[in-house]
Length: 140
Length: 415
Ligand SMILES: Cc1ncc(COP(=O)(O)O)c(C=O)c1O
Image 1 (cartoon, rainbow over the protein chains, first blue to last red):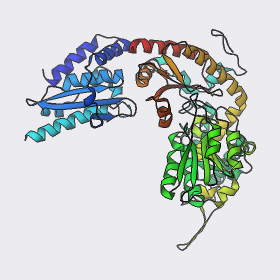
Image 2 (tube, each protein chain N blue to C red):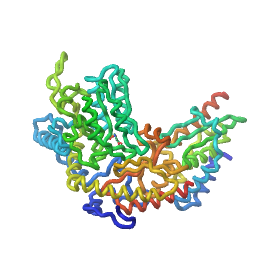
Image 3 (tube, helix red, strand yellow):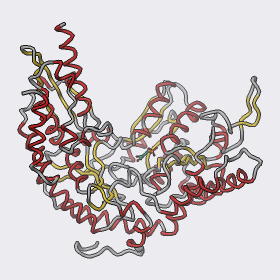
Image 4 (spheres, protein in one colour):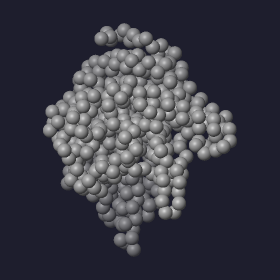
């Protein structure tokens, strides 16, 4: 599935909720079901520091696709992290680099990505793209 | 103590007071705003907003500069604001009141100028374990520059400073002590009178960071005998970007300027500059004129209500909220000093403060989460952060009830 198809899938899922609480409960469930990063991957070089919640992100290139795994100590942040991993993982570096990720706006969770939010999510996306860029340069 | 369910008694007409604060009738995320973050910054009454807006509409001119009428009038108004602040703190002279941009700048000013004049290699500076970063970093920097040593008064588990330990830290090498009046994270009201006395017995001057105190209690710098006392306007219902440093004349006279430039001089030649007298020596550049005037209005407003009435009412909010919060099983209040102001920090077992704050925000309830610029306190308790609620006199028992319901809902969602 392409990034856009995955984004559309998520937008459809969120369209089922008409109030904020259901939306957040779903996000919390996503956070809870995201496999934990094992502790030996939760090292400081994988840590993306927000002021409040922490995000750890790890990536590998397997068969030309970037595989991301990630974790957070805050569950709502982790739910957002899960969405990002679902959308961006298993895509080629180019696709990751070009992704616009406007599904976040469409599901009404933009405020988690505003630069003033101290949850490290925006920095995580930046890092995901930087990793993809590094893999791309490695290949060429 | 007020029984839960009863309305809190107060000599203040809270309903009427709330009408003075336009923002309190607004909605956030479709819910009526419940503002429990006054320790970060307090909301502004209409008199303050009007004074700022009237300044720009009808009075705008530069101070201390012009020959023209507007400039002279605003200079008089600005200096009147200084006198209002002087009287409020019961300072001996208006020129002991220095306008700054806030508590942070006031502390930086003292650390820089006092440090330059009085601190040498091997000297010691004492702060406490419960300081805001704004009252740690400037001293750390002086220590680095001068080769001085930073000592820290420890606190006990309740979040109270250990004065016997403080006594042991004092020595002939101690050049200055800097502690807060009230902790922004724990709500602890420190016994500053006793702390000042101990410092003075050691012939050491002391700075009190009153950022959290001035909105809850009357401060008399002369009866306290504080050498320096500082606060921010915005936490006292005044504008942002303006603050105050009170300093005893003898120190301010001896200290070199902090920043230099327009307004701070008597004569300038390329060889030598003669600096102006107090307070202008410490007020480089065009000041925040509207801020100073707005702050004086805020002080008048608070005095109209009476700080004793305010403190009594806020105490009843504190007691009620503490009782209600303690009913939640997994919840632990951080900071249980006997003498506390209306600030409550707490953690909920297994939950991240950030998640709790995010859900409360959806319910229109503004709280603060994180380390509150006091990481050493977090290290003391071995936690990452807390949720903090802080009340002002415009908050109500009903709001606390709504908040408790919201918190219970958040916990249920997040568990
Ligand atoms: C105890 C204390 N000191 C200093 C400050 C810094 O105040 P400002 O940011 O207004 O300079 C604060 C603000 O949170 C505070 O609570």
